[in-house]
Image (cartoon, rainbow, N blue to C red; front, side, top):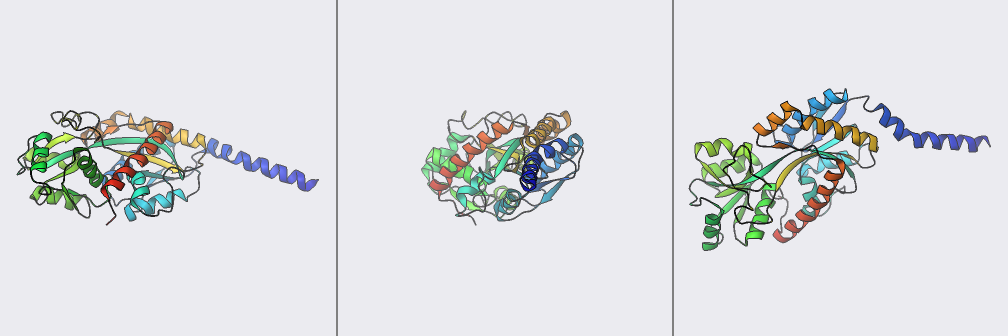
Length: 321
């Protein structure tokens, strides 16, 4: 009888553990894992968000860079961490893309993570070198169709959002533009500025000064609306190209089975951070915009991203470097 009573008590304590965790959360530092080296877009967003979460949650949020394998090292680390809200991932569509890009990954982007909130987003801009005789997308398509394979576009590497945005553009416009992968955003941009590459799909911070200097010419914004920093640049849809809406989002995820109360606490803090005046200004100055959506909205986005990029990877035949 004593054994039965002990078992019932142990089960009750076990079932109550998540609730107790949620009530005391957080009571120690939180790690925000980044699958890239310091200095890139994800890292910059993590370091913008971290101090705000520290302020709102009352515990230090530490940015933990774990680069490699196209963010898979960081993804696996978080997926296999304790579901207690103390190890979080901040990533982009790379998490969804890798499900199709790699033959095998040690995690499932939909099953092994609990989406918390998208912190910010930034559109990719179709930009050409100044020597390319195209003033708009219509001109560019005419050039590409007149000489298939003559134009090329640079990217930060095979399987990156830049690469797959280019493949999506080719797919929707039925054009032959050669992909030239580089090992990182910096060499990709260097190739474009020098004229080694004809065009690229890049975010506003990377191209802004080069556009002002006249070395690069923006043709279209792949976002859903025009950017406040480049209001003169039309969207892809306005330029006559449908189905190439690509917004680079920066979202926070926790391991699957993290208590809902913890997810809600984190999501609320991220939404508050995204809407704070100082963060909004810093994001807009970088060509991004704050989001701060709900876990449900982020979950829906993840499902859509996995499906969409699987199609692009399959059709393009994209492979990792």
